[in-house]
Amino acid sequence: MASAPLMTEQRDLEERCVCVECGQANSIGETFCAACGVALEEAGERESAAPLEPLPIGTVLADTYRLTTLLATGQENRYRAVRQTDEDRPYLIAERASDQTAAHPGGAFRLFEQLAEIHHPALILPQERFERDGRVYLITPSQSGLPLSQRIGRTSEREAAGWGVQLCQAVDVLHRHGLLCVELPPENILLDKTGRLRLIQFDAIRLKDTVEESPVLTDGYAAPEAYKAQVLNEAADVFALGACLYAVLVGRRLPVEGWAVQPEPPVFYPEKVLTPECERILSRALVLESTERYADLEALKHDWLALSQSTYIRSAWQTDVGQVRDHNEDAVLVKEVGQGSIAGDDFRGLYIVSDGMGGAEAGEVASQLAIQTVARQVEAAWAESEAKEEGDAAAWEICLREAVAAANARVVQYGKDHPEAAGLGATIVAALIQAGQLALAWVGDSRVYLLENGVLRQLSHDHSLVARLVEIGQLTEEEALTHEHRNVLIRSLGSKENVKVDTLSRPLKRGVRLLLCSDGLTSHVLDPAIADIMSRHRTPREAALELTVAANTAGGSDNTSVVVVFHE
Image (cartoon, rainbow, N blue to C red; front, side, top):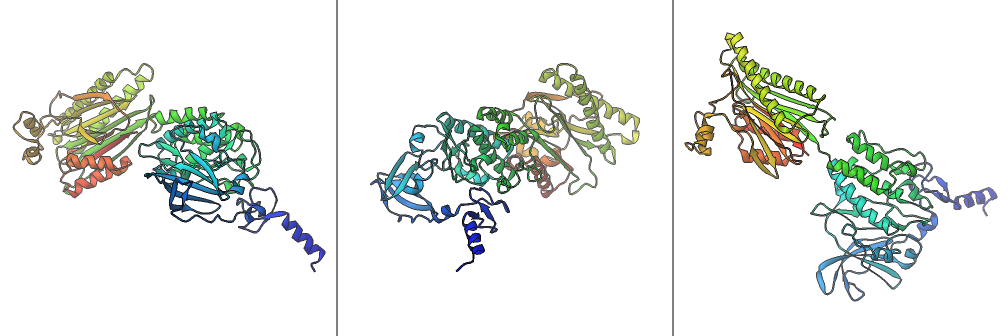
């Protein structure tokens, strides 16, 4: 017979919930363990959590749906099925015990009637519900796509912003029908081949202004208040949406296990470096206090939309001496000012590649003089524009032409002042980006390419002998590649007192990629290979590096310099 103290201790434990992870006894009603933060399940719930015996594959339900695959088992079984009359059209069937379904006021099983009234392409909702032998079945069309759970930590801010807009629109449809989504785990969201999101499971959905005593949630994807027996509002879905995008961007779900013990705001850095604006949006959506979040999904959608429509400039450069030369006569300049690397009216970028000529150290001097002069004049024009209207694209095209002409004058003057450097010269290609416009100027055979929709196009025109012979029909483009005079220039900086500078300007569309390069690249790497490299890489740095390596692998007979710019 047990002693009185032992009986008292046993009774106390029976009235408390013991954590299955650490053994800590917690008061009944607690959601998380006070010791380790793991989500708790009450003893009664654990006892009723016996798995549901799945049906044999091949079973036909309601004389209509034949089960073809068992997808998951447990308290809820999931199957793939086809219609007897149309076996090419797949369905998903969820199965629960009738008494378990009746125990919870929320979830798609209980709210089928409300969900059946909703029609929206982003919401893949159950089409049919029926009961058989003490079990309840939900029939939902099968939707193909990639689960967002496979994009966790592999998603760009632009993608996440676009998804945020779509999710706000879809969940807002539920709100207009008096429903709350409550959680948005990435595994319940599909990305289809058109780039659209599809919500496919609604296990935690509930009516507004109702209370669920024992919510079953996916940890990390629901608001703190959703774990408590209380009335929820739209702010809970604001948090759920933010939690989903936090996971796909940062690479891990929110660490909710500790919320019951010590609530903490989400951590971004060092797990992930986000732009300040993106971090501000997520932080406001994920405030632990519901009254301090976005007031509604419309406000959140507004900020995601603004972020998705903003443009970004990312750039990288690489210069290499090559496999034959013993010194590098190329010079490269990349200068970006404004809101970090976030493009807009405040962003200005200047990109220059110059290939020096003249032997000894003369070529190095010429290329350095060229980029320094252009940069100085463009910076002076930028300073003047801050106090007045910036002008149109044509004005900046003129500015760039004048800057290159000034560079030519400086190289010519240096040659006069330093007879030992006689014969020095340089090619140059310069790109100026601001206010969504691109201005170009060039002299010589350094090039600028534009990659748009997978198609590479050379925007500049070589000032070389073979290019002229091709133009007048005396050489084919294939013959020009191996012509003995292919390196002979008919125009360069330093060769004449006055040089004609070619220019152009055009809008810079989002999604295009630019390449500025010296002839050390184009002498060895053909345009199709350049297009392939520029298309394949996710970052400018990777593309710039492979372009340089490709030139060296093919011989590297000259210095190679590249500047790669992505407009995203």
